Amino acid sequence: MSRPLKLRKVCMLPKSSVFSPVGQKRKKNPIFLTIDEYEVIRLLDKEGFSQEQCGEYMEIARTTVQQIYASARKKIAEALVEGFPIRIEGGNYLLCDSKEKTCGCNGCKKQKNIKNEKAKKFL
Image (cartoon, rainbow, N blue to C red):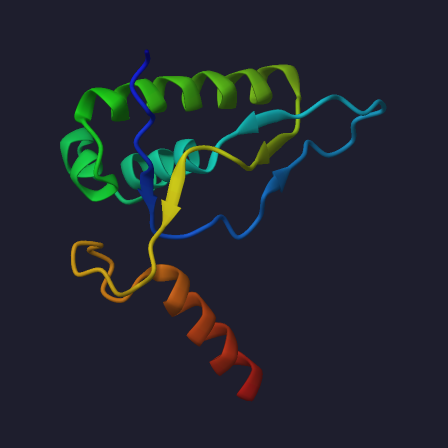
């Protein structure tokens, strides 16, 4: 009997879930990137976390972070080189509810984004 997959904690969903090359004559099937793969890319490459920090943040082992990161990079590279669209969806994740003190983003980015969007509407 295999071990159940542990849910990976994700702070925020992507603002855009589909990225497509411009100027394609024929539609290609998308490469699917999971939400947890997106979160690992965001934390390591955009936020500058170490793999260990990323693992603590997402409440998973560093080796799991390495596996997710390798999978995500391979998918992104294939999409860029071959001109495939990228679609971000699915995966084994738990979205932060913004009440957790261990989140590290001070009230959760998804909540900040919602507040910022509401503020922009009033300007």
